[in-house]
Length: 326
Image (cartoon, rainbow, N blue to C red; front, side, top):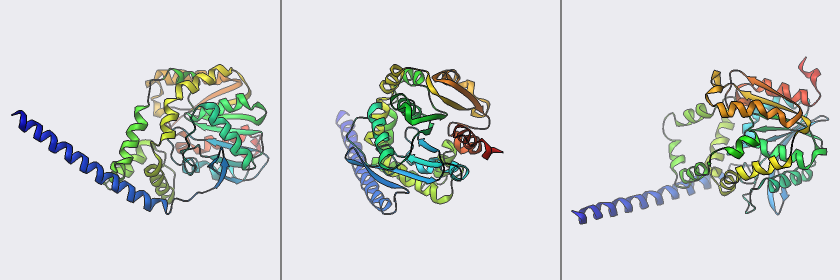
């Protein structure tokens, strides 16, 4: 009986190894094809010995710098719903951290000072003119607040779009398993295969709503970015260091002497279902001498994909273009 069990286990292991090998080969070939058409929407700049990507358009005397949330594989596509309402009044600059979008993957550790040094160097190399208004989604809040702590003369204001507070991230549970799972699904071709299952792409879009307002070509761009980049070592390290990074921001001190506007999603009337998040959002304006919070109805975590007009209006207010709202 034991010999039979061992034989079955051995056969199952062999099948798993073969399937893993086939999946990895499928992912390798698919990635090779995707890279042929996955081309930068902006320009690449030398930063810390590697290439870092920044997309910019628009004109004006103010520059809005966009910081994406953790795991957002293509920041350009993520913030796309905001561009039309902004570019005729202000300049837009969307950067890709290392490991994201079109930037290289780096061996440098993802601690918050390293990240802000890289952003600072990229903005200088690309010819952006401070002071900036930062617009940060989700965990992008940490790097924008830290940037304002370290380079206060370069920041005019901050808009946090469902941005988490440093206090929240410092006490949040360890989530490092998530990027490892994502990496496994990508590496062994499982994620790529799921795109051939009827309804999967629509479910993924509806689940995150990050593609709610995107044209079809940008949905395809998002698909390629997800299959090429999700769960890479920079994203994994970024998540594993999130609590230490939050601690470093807390040690930097508050309040900041710039306006901070906090846009919090109402989660379709269910914000209070996560009381710790709701409480931390309510306290987040205390990071500014003139902070304010607005609860945005009819939205979820990807707030800018539900209510882009509200986000645009708040950015124009911070940029001093209130006349554009009339």
